[in-house]
Image 1 (cartoon, rainbow, N blue to C red):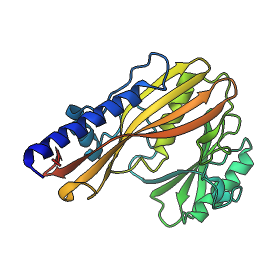
Image 2 (image 1 turned 60 degrees about the vertical axis):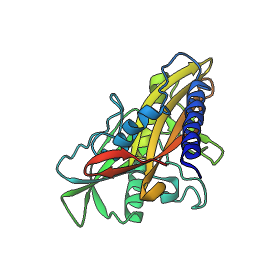
Image 3 (image 1 turned 30 degrees about the horizontal axis):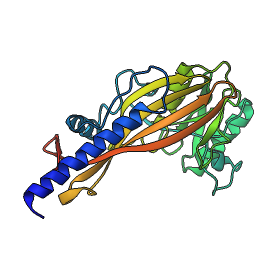
Image 4 (image 1 turned 90 degrees about the vertical axis):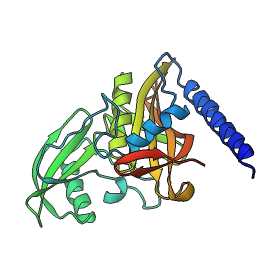
Length: 272
């Protein structure tokens, strides 16, 4: 292919990505909440820098869930329904819920053992959303196991399914702040809260009786780009809440992809 044709194709490809992503950011949210157009070519380097940064992978003001045990090794998880036999292994995984502390305590023992984290309960606490059981790892007293179970009277995730069902928010009246908390909190317990993943923006909106909250997230697929570069994929992860019924749903929309690499401590874009 001639160089001038290749260059024109490259410019056309970028223009299509920008138009598509800006349109996706502009639609479906309702309300007047600010949206972050992440698809502009000038911003891709900033996205890559965030993905490769091991210390700052969320935007300013994002939900913090700091360890209560600084200096110790911590294994933190939510008890899954499959961990305790209330859902089959083939079902979409979802977090168990209970309003009975005795059940939560039993599930903490069972789930910790099933994960190979044999441990002894040392303390417990709770918030409006969940119970927490803290445990000392039997094989290493310098390690702590933190298990959590949602309160059913706050969030029941049993309706989560492959078509986008994400549970029922039982706290009423549910607010935009509740949905923001859930959206950011669930990210912290998702596969996306790992190295080479980052949240670029976190924004909410309201349309009639439906609240929405969007996380724009990015991840690096190592070696999947041109010439051995990584491919950076950018997605919109939306949670929607019907404030009348409490029904929670989720969807993921691809926004753009580009190639980058991390060389000598710096993120670099790769040319096609």
